[in-house]
Length: 191
Ligand code: 5GP
Image 1 (cartoon, rainbow, N blue to C red):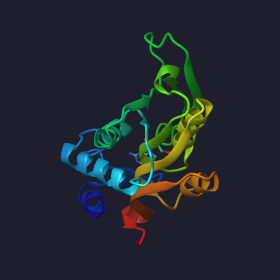
Image 2 (cartoon, rainbow, N blue to C red):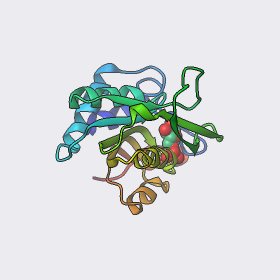
Image 3 (tube, rainbow, N blue to C red):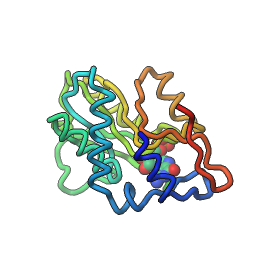
Image 4 (cartoon, rainbow, N blue to C red):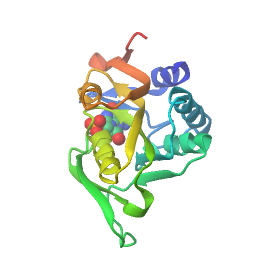
């Protein structure tokens, strides 16, 4: 997605540890127009799928998950990284290692928001080692539903997540694919 790539080049910072900082439009301040266009692009890419629900993970997946769900006319559900006292009903939970926080979190979704026999589209902001997406997929499958695909805003193609998810049989659609973040330079995969 050309528009997203331009914004990454204009506003992104490549940090040590192969981390891309895009907090001016995706990770802290959110650009609603760009989020809407990203949602529309995900819908376009998965137009051949029947989708009943969008699943993402807090916090940065929510904006793009919402615009995708809005355009599809389906609900958005987000996994929580911490359980709250309000989550008193039964939940699906799984452990996920956080790439940016370098800690393991138990992510959870209330069972009532992940019914069986649905087609679920997973959306997330970044793909690095694939742990978040795999954790979300595990919960969908535990619920007895199907992951129709995984939509990623920014795929770091030089990390193992993409091949891990592809080998596990998931369809991945990434709006921007980064080849390298070495030497503080942002390079995209040639499409
Ligand atoms: P994974 O689970 O694929 O290893 O990492 C994906 C998750 O880690 C995303 O949900 C995102 O929050 C975070 N993440 C991974 N790499 C980056 C990055 O380069 N920049 C930012 N801002 N977040 C990242």
